Amino acid sequence: MDDINQFEIERKFLIRMPDIACLGRDGELSHIVQTYLKTEDGSERVRKRGREGEYTYTHTVKKRLSDLRRIEQERVISEGEYLSLLRLADPDMSTIYKDRYCIDYMGQILEIDIFPFYSDRAFLEIELSDESQQIFIPPWIDVIKEVTEDKRYTNAALARNIPYDPI
Image (cartoon, rainbow, N blue to C red; front, side, top):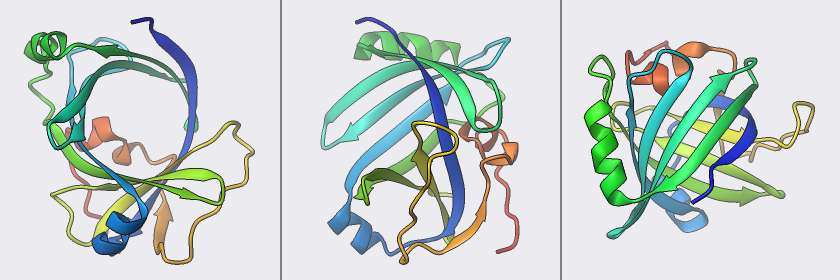
């Protein structure tokens, strides 16, 4: 399959743990296993995403341009290629496991990530078409703080160290 090259523009928020039952009603759930590979520049990962035995596999390379904008090259790969690339996993980084709920709210897709290492907080990510795009956060989401520019809260950083700022 052809590579997909694009700019990724997103904002990220640390939120109080939402009601999982509500997320399950309103959103589409995917289980994600994300493993980072050894790389000299940027971030490289493989991801298994899906549920109930139906999974897709992707290989992604990201290069940060600014806190909001990255170049992302992503391609769908086979399960065999995924398993082969796992052998290149960075031993200094843990595999990230998370449940992602995708919710359509006011014409934008909200991605809420629930991690097994947090019981009181989660993440909300909103992908944007441009950096000045207005965002809408539902009133039932309790935002603790925006962490878009806090590099400790990238998934790659979480694979190295999990921050526990007081909330």
